[in-house]
Image 1: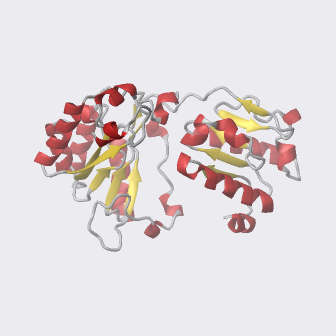
Image 2 (image 1 turned 30 degrees about the horizontal axis):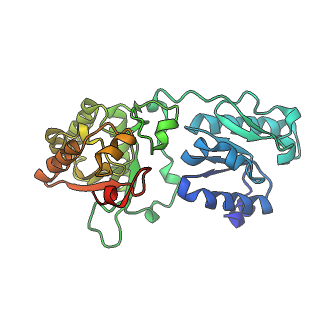
Image 3 (image 1 turned 180 degrees about the vertical axis):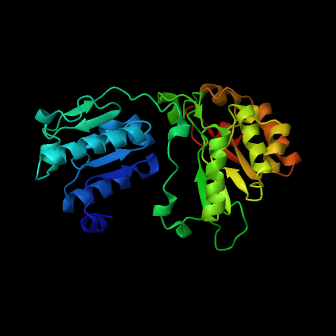
Length: 323
């Protein structure tokens, strides 16, 4: 990555940092800073929750907390203005406290060149998700992106794409980053999702699609509308899955049957634990029988299922984990 940055010479670098990859994100930022001088910005769930942890690193300048689109654009605009006024760039000058470049930039944690870390107020989450442009798939070598969780039997991997139809979650399960993120559940319109879905299938030859929503079935009626649109537009021939699963308490047999007709091949349910007391302690707001019924509903219509479990929750013992 550092070699590519040296060759490409970008004005700014952004790195996504989920918890399992955050150390690699730091190493990448360090390697870039050693060979090239530009602002290095981190974003993603992990750094949104622990922004100072990353900003303390000498090679990280800014952390964007929460949703990144508006914050990233604002950072780039402020960098562009700085470059217009200064013929020679240095990150030390750009981040100098006297410049006050980011004093009023919402949703960021940043470090001025004197080493001081500043936490700005949160940015309001994007209300109208339909206003966002689709990912720029044409800029990537999409032939290299296959099989999220294989929904097809292609030996060499199918052309796999992901799509988000909603953001956020109204539940506050204690083990999940959503429990401390100031982000409400919002959705795209079924028509907007359909348009991108068609784009993936007809323009990019998608052979499988994975829905990445945190809670795709929060509003069942909206999901039903999307299913009907996929069927009516003959887009149900391409198999798709719920990558992150859906709420078991909202997974009726009727809904799952409709989704299967719309092309759903596999769903997942967050079981987390088989112990009722542990379940209560994580504030999942669901009971074991409801989860069992959701799996039963799926199996009765021959829908593939996955269960997500967490081993080692607070209070877990060998006995509770065995359950």
